[in-house]
Picture 1 (cartoon, rainbow, N blue to C red):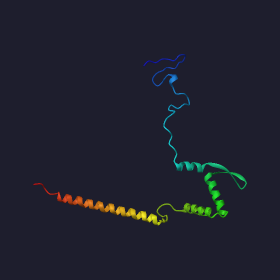
Picture 2: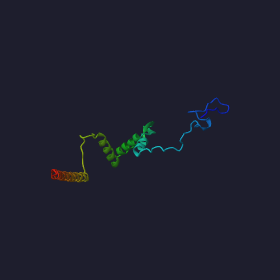
Picture 3: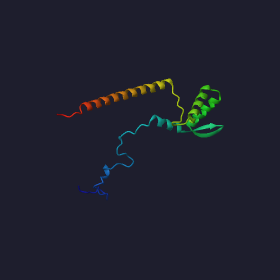
Picture 4: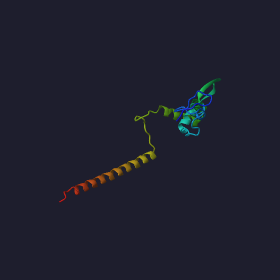
Length: 150
């Protein structure tokens, strides 16, 4: 592999120095049709939208706030004007915000939840019983087959 100079340049072509006409152009990707970027999750997209700022008139003055704050402001306004649906939602949100997280949280289960847990417990009991029976059979086979060959 010889090195040579391009016409009119002091640029030497060689290892790690490709000819100028084959080099990537400035600002152009080396892989323009490359792998697509990962699509954002619904939760991430929602967070981005809710955190976006917007300008709102509050008490006659322009105020910057997030869309999340603006939505809560509207909810409070409608609840204070007598909307029972908005008041109920506001109370639910307030209660969820105060709810303790972890084992000390009061857990209220509906009948459907209890039925699912009972079914799961029944299946766990059935699996354990079958495992015990299989282990007992293996133990019997080992005792029976444990004799000496004559």
